[in-house]
Image (cartoon, rainbow over all chains, first blue to last red; front, side, top):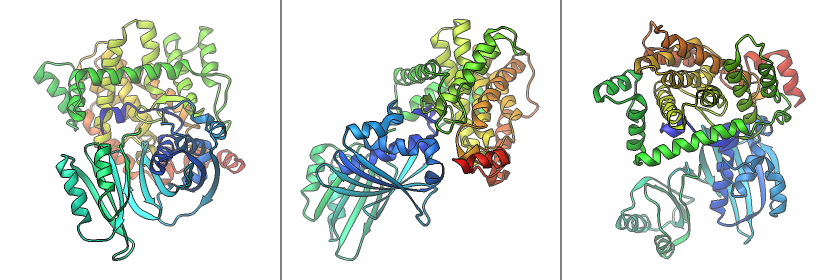
Amino acid sequence: MSLFDILGPVMVGPSSSHTAGAVRIGYIARVLLGCKPVSADLALHGSFAATGKGHGTDRALVAGLLGMKPDDMRIPDSFRIAKEEGLAFSFEEVQIPGAHPNTVLLFLRGEDGKELEVQASSIGGGRIMINKIDGIDVNCSGELPTLIIHNLDQPGLVAKVTTRLSEKNINVATMQIFRDKRGGFAVMVIETDQPIFKKNLSYLENIEGVVKVTYFKGEVG
Amino acid sequence: MAFTSLEEMVSLCKEQGKPLWEIILEDDMHDRDASKEDSWKKMCRMWEAMLASVENYEGNIMSRSGLVGGMGAKMESYGAEGNSLCGDFVTKVMATALKTGESNACMKRIVAAPTAGACGVLPAVLVPFYQESKCGEAKIIEALYVAAGIGQVIAYRAFIAGATGGCQAEIGSASAMAAGAMTYLKGGDEQQIVQAAAMALKNLLGLVCDPVAGLVEVPCVKRNVVGAVNALSSADMALAGIFSKIPPDQVIDAMREVGEKMHDSLKETALGGIANTPEAKKFTQGM
């Protein structure tokens, strides 16, 4: 663990997993949505459901959706701020078989009408794992720059994407590839050691067969 | 991460003729590819946030559950009467531990050190010492490097989360870090620093994590007090020349063994210990 994982982070209490981690989940979900969310339906699983209220997990998730980070002193006030900023939200409890005890399922709608479903877990010490995006497994931490590419399942697309990254001296740290069915839709989840600049992202978007490119630069905590 | 043992840290100090805090700082620079200035500034921000977490305490608010609040203020006014058993400085340490722990429970901003549940231990010893000794900020920053370096070795060899190792891993680790920091501030050498840390950890071995209703409130806030006071007594023992018969790294390994053998009901699940008392269960049902 890095020195400042031991002494730090600076965060709003009371719990790194139930509060700080929850803020990060909300924050990353907002980044993944790509715009201001206007509605959020949140389903809490396991310990998030059982002890979430006492730990402020609910306010922390909403704070993250409003773009706050774990050290933002406005976190306890997030419900009121959500009202001011036009974010409608609801909470319910769910049981997700096999999920980590601190898991939340978020259904978001953005101001541009875009919808997104994210399942994420807070795995301790404020660290998180994004399990699924729109039902597809992604399993990334959000700590590194992360590229999520939705594409048609056709030959050569992985090579085209990774070639561009190598040309720009961007090192791939982890890479996962999923698809719904042969020749259907596929998703690449790529974590990199270096940030990816906008012009490279638009290049990737313009590759034939690429449907959508989502990127977040990581290290939000 | 370069250091896997306290012994290795101490011998590197001797080899290079550098103080402990400096070799820990240099390791951070290497680990994060950061400049000395960057690392130092980052540690200064942690210190500023710690000071603020004590200053921003409000004695008249309760946590959302209603379990904690106001204890820091009570301890402070009791201490001010000048008639406590522990004396002025230790009473201030106790009040500061309660304040920070309660602020955490009340969703205020704190510095996790090493965790949010144990956030009161380091400020409890450092803030009153800083205010009374006038040792200056630089000295405190150096002490924070000492504390963090000790914590890093504990995290590597054992654990620092209640869910994995019980409270000994949280308050115990924080207490070891604070004992090392205080020994450094009082002029102890490298060996005395790690000895103080070892004794502090040893004294809290076996402490279980049994939070009522799973909340970081009861008994967590008050355990910050014991972590802080235990740090002071361990530091004083080391400074008096009293050493741990068991080498510091072996004490850390013992903490790991105890944590691994600890029953799951005593590791943050709120199923055992204080959390399993009739009163705690009644409270949990009423929530």
